[in-house]
Length: 533
Ligand code: 16G
Ligand code: ZN
Image 1 (cartoon, rainbow, N blue to C red):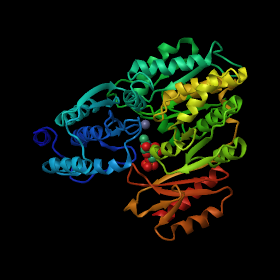
Image 2: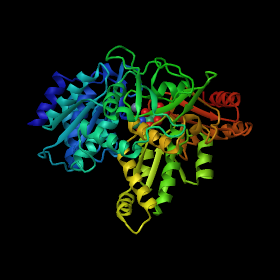
Image 3: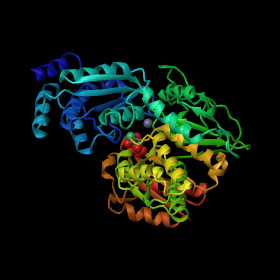
Image 4: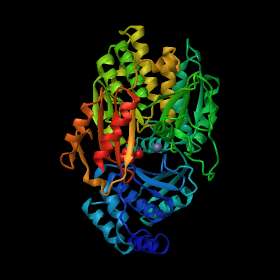
């Protein structure tokens, strides 16, 4: 009987309005909000199926991250708090694109294929960002969940990483943390305070930061942290415009700052002042400052990753436990950062394809896996082995006091970190902890290595899928001959490196180039772009 409801609901309230197919891409479905009603409804249906199949709580996040305010999107979160498994992305695409009257048959197919017991009672957690379109899209999701007799639990406006955290907590019976907003703030803030102790300032480190909330959910949620952090860390909030002002991500936020390499609007320009920007759903963060000559300096995901990896390596050495630490990057990582990590820090680096799920997956292979995309999305994950060993070490009186304390510090760091996915605010607390521990200002952090100048271009092509790549997107396979041509161009440049890949989120091809000087990197990118047309 519930299948009938599915169709009736679809026909009457959430009819398919878009003719062409849309795909569950790197970050779920993402397009103009006005085209998403039926997609949301169908993702509500899919979440119930996935939840019954996995016998666990599934999350749905409604957001289009750094995209303009008129866009929206949706992605599903698996029980471990990770992004939905890849094999089900195809099901999502299929379910999204069938006609209304094919919905019931498609659901039956999935139920049969995966032997899903449709009598299991399931909870679906729903969260949304601050976009004006989000409330009505959330209602469509709820209808989908109800149509298959699932129980929707609405978390209201939350960040993407909060949603991932809630899902993980609910599936681990609150062992990972309490699965509420309050539980989240308490976990992160108390660990942060434990690490900071009473030394709020240390040598060149000053405990004040300017925070660009991108006029989105990151601005809202940082207030809960401010209240709880008190004098321990002064966060000066900027870009906190209300819902529907059209200012979300506009000339501000992490994506703007990183891709334009510009200081955001709405943040006061104070020379040498440490600043951060988060993106529209607060899963990305970048650091930056303007110097006394008003020159802009960006410290992106690569910088954050190296800072974290270096500090974790020191602590692991200090506690004398044998844990393997690795860093995961994508082809977009600045060559200078990769050099610094492998040669100076002597931490092994792996390179994987763009997209958080690829990085996360690879990071699971280490006891401590640090992963970051250059754009500022990343986190650290710790294996069960690492956690067990650290817990033992912290209590082991045969170890020296220094060893025990290092183990304790690592355990507190684990609690500051949102292991489920990149989390802008958690990452910020982690970076602030490390800078405080080292007594560093942002300039000292920047001095660890010098970025190679780089340029990112995009070109529109007839069919971006004609371009295929291998070796973590660093080489192209088709069109035939293109890789050789790129190779010949790159050779001409001092410290040149360039690659091209089809975007997973836009109908374009992206070109990345780096070289010894700014001019050369621009010229290299332009030359390669010529070959892609
Ligand atoms: C998505 C990915 C992000 C990646 C970006 C690349 C997630 C949650 N987000 O936003 O990691 O950097 O796509 O976009 O996986 P592109 O394919 O258009 O270059
Ligand atoms: Zn985001």
